[in-house]
Length: 129
Image (cartoon, rainbow, N blue to C red; front, top):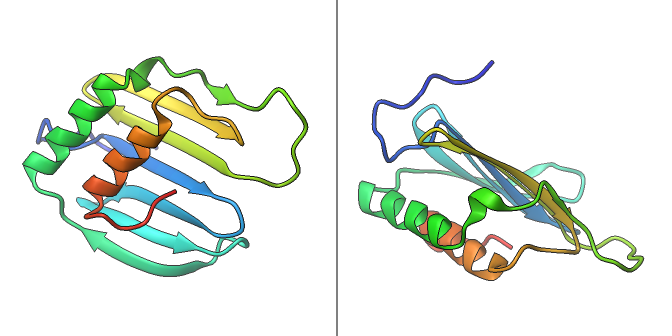
């Protein structure tokens, strides 16, 4: 079931971001809080922190995503060559009437490092990626 739309225009309707290989990170919107997790390769939550980014942090995040044109990312990215293991990532965001669902394995859209920096900034500079 889709969560209800936020009454604050700067908050997401849905946000679920993940990246990892041997271990990983997940950031998601849950009941009015941004949740940051560090996970094991098996998906076990090793650390979890609930965050409350202020309006300025959210607006900076959305501005960065708009500048990176993430809303036009391809649904899936993979390398043109065979790989074993590697880094997997996924993004699912719904905000302001727009939706982004994208993922990849060992391949990234242009500007991905800047996307990771924007996510880290929103999460108070906690690790992500």
